[in-house]
Length: 264
Image (cartoon, rainbow, N blue to C red; front, side, top):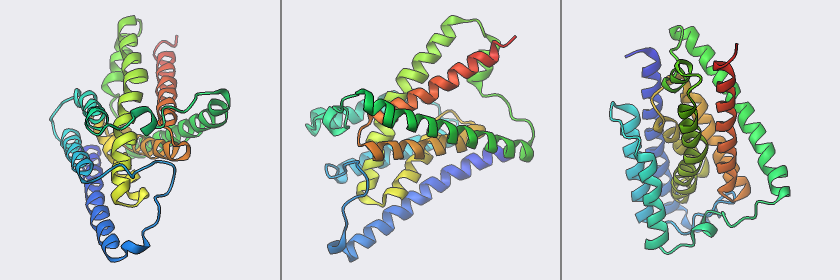
């Protein structure tokens, strides 16, 4: 196991340990000072969630943890898990899904210009800076990093329209919707219901990072991106915010990759 792979595994283990500590201390605190319990911070509602949702969330976290830290490959999980979440919250719990996720929020010009655009700029700048510094540090630590499989495939097939179209659909349509419903829309508020918001955000960001294809170079940027998308959701109270920012970030990276592999 290389140093980079060891860092990846250690970060995944740390996320699970933090989850256990957060759940334990959160429950002990509430048992002792239940009468002093304050309303949850932020604009993301957690009142609808109970023990069944916590069990579902913990089960999904364990599965994604196993997927991210072993050779177990199951890309279909990122499609199946959000579907199961929507089925549970919709037909089973009878929650109005659009209202529950804040998707009934009108996407008017003030919202897009005053909220989404600034968030997109900040999230993209901070994540790219993290990526640059993280890869610089890893390069000094372990030497030249291999290109991610997807990037290498694009370099080998720079003119293949089918590959670019499939990547656009996966990265800019499927991923922002499915991943935001699962990680920010469900896992984060469920954990927030039982632990402090910061602990919930850290754990979900860690699972979000290791749920992607194993690549040490992308671990820290994905973790930071996961934290920032939680902040977007909390600031606005609508899942439209992380979905649109996630879309913009992935689209920006896709355009940059297209320009770099087709340069000259």
